[in-house]
Image (cartoon, rainbow, N blue to C red; front, side, top):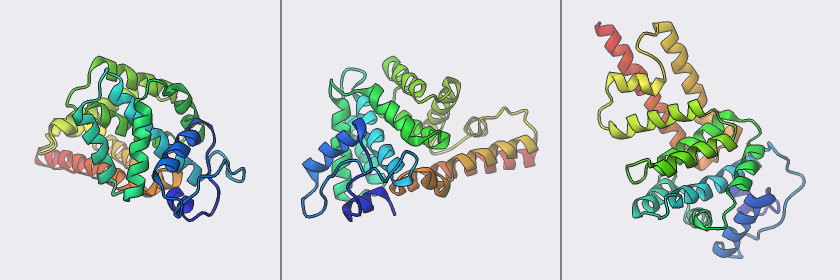
Length: 259
């Protein structure tokens, strides 16, 4: 059962304290009708690392940080707002859930948004789940590219976010490069693009290629990510990442077969 379903069902007060819990409290109080949910305090029966707690932390930090990135270049473009809405719709969020996500996005745009505290709590809540942090950053990269350009301020913001989450900068650069490739050639992936998607050089052996492919599949496997704390509503995004990896691998195999 997802954290959202549990909260609406009133099974427990709520799973988060700290800045993320405070932001969710504002979002819930302002946007959910009283007959559906009452926002409570931090339930001490839930501890860092518990799946539903991690799901709540991922959801609240994802959309608030997305709002921060949208504002980091000094203005929030129409494209960035649409991108946030598209992510919400793409995840097939219920109307109430979309409303809360939009409120979190708006909180992230505010001048008093405390990015450091939000990132630190998310890092602690995710409890060294590297695959989960990677998915979080992949979605933030997509948000930064909403207007078609990754400018200097956005790039620096992504690097800062990765640093605070203890995510290696060279791996962030790889994620940025992969997104640039897949977004620019979404209609027709080239063989060169496919190698970038898999993060390998053209000179790798078939065995090395398969190893890289399997590693990426494991990192983006929807069921594994949900088990680690990815909100169930975001499985569709993980499935699309998995399909990108499969398509890239199949393209390279086909090309090598022809040779």
